[in-house]
Amino acid sequence: MEADYVLTYTALMIILGLLVSSFNIYTGSDVTKFLVAIAEASQKPGSVLEVRVLLGEGASITCDGRRITVKNAVIPRDVIKLYRSYGIGDGDSGSITLSMDINSFRMDGGYIYTVLIESTPSKIIVKIAETRKI
Image (tube, rainbow, N blue to C red):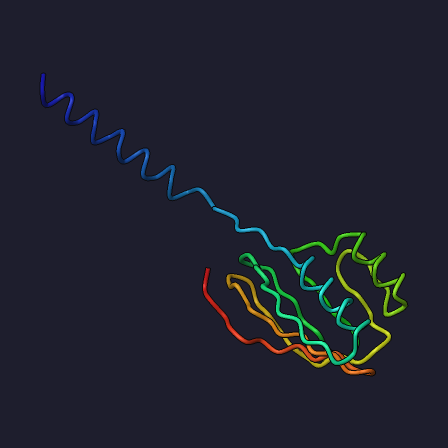
């Protein structure tokens, strides 16, 4: 009788273990603060802003030339409206094309980044100050 309880308990623990291991816990990404900080820095040449960026697994932010591209995360419409209202760029839910220069960089998913955003009258400079694994 007691052996039945032990076997039942063991079987339930194995099933629970398999269920928990099959869950894919998704860590979301928030690119809004980062993109707003770039827009704000562009309006105040000489400023330096610090912002933290959380990128979940599979997400990325890349910049090459004047184009910022976001993968597996969404650029909110309000951010695109902000760029348009400042006259510094235009885009859609996956990328923004700037009317000013920005240095090339890449941030991959699965990390929390501390980023410094510096502005000059004609260019935005993004520097990754710290990277931590999620």
